[in-house]
View 1 (cartoon, rainbow over the protein chains, first blue to last red):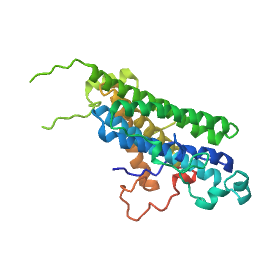
View 2 (cartoon, helix red, strand yellow):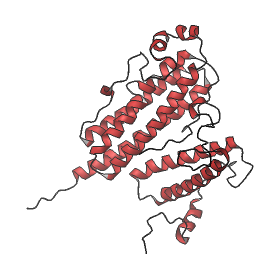
View 3 (cartoon, each protein chain N blue to C red):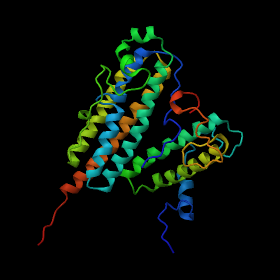
View 4 (cartoon, rainbow over the protein chains, first blue to last red):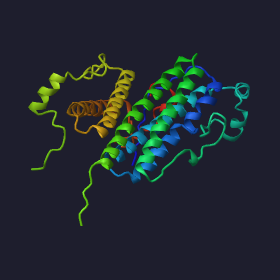
Length: 193
Length: 117
C-alpha cells in the first residue's frame, strides 16, 4: 500500500502565471512519455518479474514516478491558477477550460487524453525492461524539449531539471536489472531427470 | 535470540568503517541538533533526507551487497525519522499515520499550492 506524504519530492514555487507553458508541460502529466504512463507501466509490470531485483526496482521506481506526477501537476496548477480567461484563451486553453476548468487532467501537449495504450506490460521480463529503458530516454528527451521551451522561467526550469536527472538515474537502474536477468538466462543450465 | 538482519552500522567494526568512509552531511547548515532551525529549513532538510533515502534504496535494489551504500541508507533513514518526528510534534502531521490530539491534517496548505511544502 501507499501512504501520502504531505511534501513534494522536489519543491515547486512558481511566481508567474504562464498558461502557455502549462499547456506543454501537461504532456509530462498525461502524455505518451509522461509520469502517469511511467508509474502505471512499472507498477503493472512488477507482478510478472522473475527475480527480487527487478520486482523491487519496478516497485520503487513506479512509486517515485507517482511523486513526479504530483510535481508536474503542481507546476501546471501554479502556472494557471491565477490566469484570466483572456490569458487562457490566448494560450489556446479555451477547449481545455471548457471540459476541465482548473483541474489538472491527464492530456498530452496536443490535447489528446491519456490512454492505457501509452503503457506496455508484455508479460516478458526482457521485453518489459527494454521498453522501460526506452521510456526513460523518451521522458528525458521530452524534459529537454520542455527545458528549451521554458528557458525564460527559472522557477519552472528548476523542477524540470530535477525531473530530467531522475530519468537518467532510472535508466541506469533498469539497465542493471536487465543485465541481472540476462546473466541468469545465459548461465549454464544442467538438466537432469 | 532473534537474528539481527539490520545493517549494524552501530557495531564497532562498522562504526570504524563509517568513520573511514567519512559519511557526507547532506546539508552543512543543517544543524539537526539545533532547535533554532526554522520550519522552512526543517522541511528542506526533510526533503534532502527523503531524496537521499530514495536514491540509495534504488541503488541498493541493484547493488544489495554494497556495505557503504547500506550504511549511508541506515544513517539517512534514521536522521529522516528523527527529523520528521521533531517536525510533526511542532508543525503537525506529514502523514495520516501521525497521532494528534486534534485533527491537524487540515491545518496546513497542500504541497501543490506552493509555499513551504
